[in-house]
Image 1 (tube, one colour):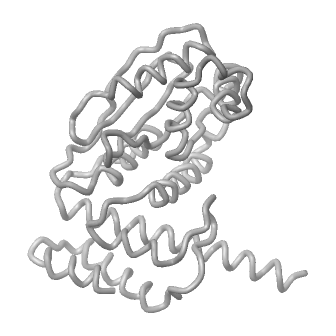
Image 2 (tube, rainbow, N blue to C red):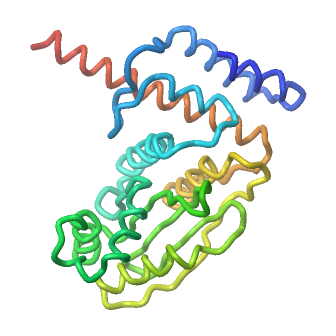
Length: 253
C-alpha cells in the first residue's frame, strides 16, 4: 500500500479526473486483494507480492513483462489475429542468442527446439508476425516484431537507440536460416522515455500500438504511472476471473 501512497503524494498536482478514478479503483482492489498465494492465469506462477511493482517506479522484471505479454496475447486473440500473430516471452531472444552462438549444432541439438520449431512454423504457415519484448543493454527493454510476410524486423527503443549489433546478427541469421531471405530493419513508433524505469511499460505499449492500434502514451510521468495502474488492475481482474472459473469447476464436479 505504501508504494501507491508515495506515488499519490508525489504527483498530486498533476492528477486528472482519470487518475483519481484509477486511484479509487486501485485502493478498492488493494483492500480486497489477498496478498498470500499466487497469481493465477499466466504461464508462470508468481507470488501476489509481485503486483506491488506496478504501483511503484521500480524497473519491471522478466516476470512482469511476461504477464503483460500474456495480456497482449489475449487481446490479439480477441481481435481476430490468432492465426497470423504469435507472442513470445522475453526469453525467446535470449534463446536466439544461444542458438546463434552454437549455430553449428542448431539443426541437430534438442537444446534449440524452441527457436527452430518457431522458425519453421513462421516460415511455413499463415502465422507471419512474431512479437516480443527483448532485453538489451543490461537493464533495458525494447519492443520487437519479426514480420516473416514482409521480411521486416521492427524494433522500438524508448531511448531512441539502434538495435544492438548482437541481437541483429542473431535475428538476421535465424530468419535467413528459415526463409533464405534477408530481412530489413525498421524502427516502429514508440514513446520517448524520460526516466530510468519506464522502458518496460513503453515497449509493451508500442507492441499494443503495432498490433491493436492503441494510442501511444504521451510520455509524461503521469501517463506512465496511470498505465502501470491500468496494467495492475487488468492483471488482478484476469486473476480473479481464473479463480472464479476454478471455483465453478470444483463446485460443478
